[in-house]
Amino acid sequence: MVKRILSLVGWLGTALVFAAFAISRVPAFDRYGGYARPLAMAGLVCVLAYTAGQWREVAKIFGGRQARYGTLAATSVLVVLGILVAINYIGSRQNKRWDLTVNRQFSLSDQSRNVITKLDAPLQVLVFAQEPEFQRYQDKLKEYQYVSKQVSAEYIDPDKKPTIAKQNQVQQYGTIVFNYKGRTERVTSDSEQDVTNGIIKVVSGQQRKIYFTSGHGERETALSERDSYGDITTALKGENYSVDKVVLAQSGSVPADASVVIVAGPRTDFFPNEIDALKKYLADAGKLLLQLDPPDKLDSRPLTNLVALAHDWGMTVGNDVVVDASGMGRLLGTDASVPVAATYPSHPITQRFSYLTAYPLARSVTPVTGGVDNHTAQTVVETSQQSWAEMDLKGLLTSGQVSLDETKGDKKGPISIVAAVSAASTAPPKPGQEANAPKPETRVVVIGDSDFVANSGLGVQGNRDLFLNTVGWLSQQENLISIRPKEADDRRITLTATQQTNIMWLSLLVIPGFVFGTGVYTWWRRR
Image 1 (cartoon, rainbow, N blue to C red):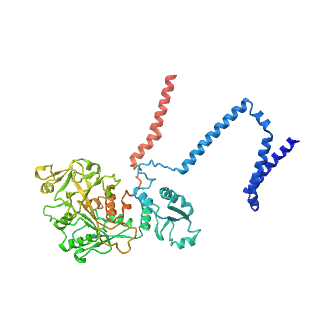
Image 2 (cartoon, one colour):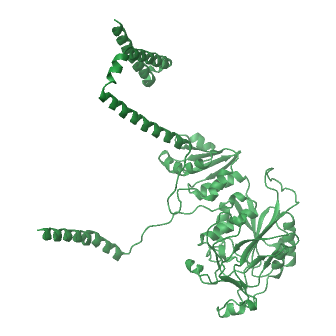
Image 3 (cartoon, one colour):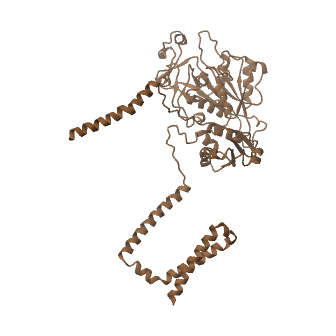
């Protein structure tokens, strides 16, 4: 009698469990969803009661040899499953990824990481694209979300949700909208460079203005010639700078909205009133970048006033040309007149910087020992030990044949060619400056070359990054001091028609014929 009752209880429990499963899974039973959990619990209790009532039969089953082996096997399976579950549990909370590609094309650059890790408020990213394209954007944006939990992304098809697209002023597919602290920025490309630049713009909240001086043969910023600054100007605009020119001889002063003033390779010296304008600007927490080339002609006039201004800030600009005999220039296809730097003294501009930089026809820029008027400069870039500062400009410019001769004033390397100095400023914060912005400082950088970031010099990856890092440090935007995103290497093989034909015959006749001939020869010998 008891066994029959327990059997009925077991069947009842099974029926209750199936009923709970049906209610929770079948849409037709949604109105009974509240009963699923109680039915499942009641069914479980009935099944456990039936199992407890059959304990003798259960014990007898597990008493045999086969049962023990089966129990051991089942236990082993459970242990393995437990280990796998534990590994996945830990992995879901301690996510670590490795990018093994040569150019780390599936990892964010240092610049992107710097910007993302310093977010102090949620960054909302809205991607407006057609639904089949979502995966492409997810592959890119999940790298940003992996770095910071402040980043959230939402993918919207403007055809299915036109109202939201209209609210965000979306005009084309592939538009990415960034919202941060009430500010909005848009980009229409999913490349890392464009996405990061969009984030920089929405995070900074304001566009800093860079003025290039004009009127003394400085580099042009809007041309595409080899010696112009067209490409680096585009790169500056991509990092949320606006670029303009100023003729100090006409204006008499530096514009009030200038974040950085750049003197890029002047051919003639500045007038005294222009130097006075720069001094007044620096006294008001100004930021100045001097790029002073060495003489390229025997009758070139010295840049006396600009060199004196650099000295006032603790830097000596040498009347020399740096020669590099290390042979590193051959790696870049250049000669000894292009010094190459591979290691850098400790400075915020070159923090974690490990790329080669090259400087066509550069002069030395050396910090003054002990400083000048409490302005103590630091070396930022120096050349190799096999380089030297050549004082015999006449011999270098006429014959091109020079050698290290310290008795004639030549200075043995390493030679400093970039130096920087900063000084605390008592100037009040500028209008519109954020309350948590860094305290204003006067900052000056002097570089003994201007060719290295001309269009012809940007083929060296380090040149571009070093210049942008310098401008980022001058403008007190330390989050922009890093290594920028790089394009993936083009590893395609270009073949001529003859090479393609040779490969075709090699794969269709030569290799198969060799294999066939080897087989026939082996068969003949065994025969």
